[in-house]
View 1: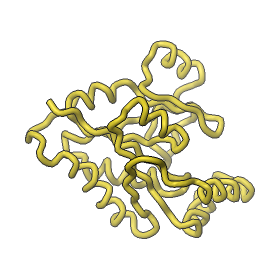
View 2: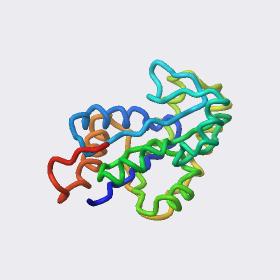
View 3: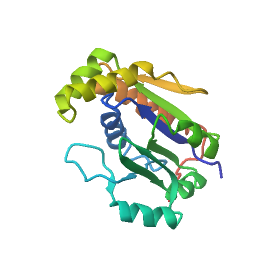
Length: 193
């Protein structure tokens, strides 16, 4: 059986990455060959935020010690993990989509050399408006996020760029085609994990 593709999605906070992932999940809900991995995060679940599994620091440490994460990293005072279940899904031929960290990408590529990076981009003007609209950060924190986005360079290696400045459906359809289109030529009727 052909191994699936790991799609590692990155983008600045406020780029609309969560909205794009949600769009892709809904658009491809009936496709048995595409699986969206949940992140395990040491933060409470938010009503309109990412669909993640909330863990306490103690729970995160226990899962880490048990070897249950395929990948894990820290960012902005939080800890993030991707469960080892992705290895089973990939081995079954499923395309696996995950929300990644830009800083962790080189390590993720080391662990998964065939990883397919997808970078969500947005203009600084749109990014600033989105960050202010969500109301999570102070003006100083927004300025820091904008500076960080300005300095972030395109990652090394192959990266598909999805511009998310406009309507979500435009970027979302391109994203869905990328995820499902990479299965072209594989056997029909693929069933994942």
